[in-house]
Image (cartoon, rainbow, N blue to C red):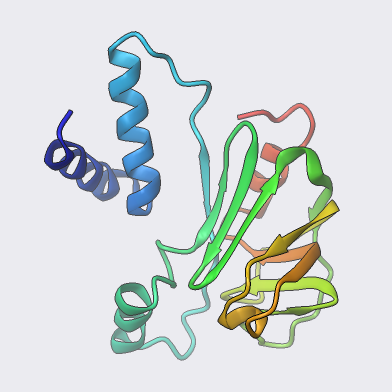
Length: 179
């Protein structure tokens, strides 16, 4: 399948499912391989990060989505058979599924704080104060140096993320909830 056909099929899937381009492209390629006799192991699940609409005007939403690759429909958590990928703007964390020791609703009081905040192994990735889920990670994972980490490599052993469907993520990560 040519790049143009893959791109067109991915954009069509994006319009139907609301997935980000990368997830839609991977799904299109897997479907194409399955049609050729190569069956993919499983489909990844996508959980969107929840965003508060307070203070989000059309210009801010447009700039977040197009310029900074963040905001509703772009940021989220993708889970497949082996890995959990968390993406919000420049924050990119890949966690092996076997490293997640526990997952639960969070009692954190973030007092209206949104964005990416962290240090000393504890990170908050949220667009709202609703739907917070806490993942305990052991052994810890590491973030590459970037703007969110003040250009230093940072450890992550506790991640709190706001989700549109927090119970769905919890169910997907429970030991019997394989994708």
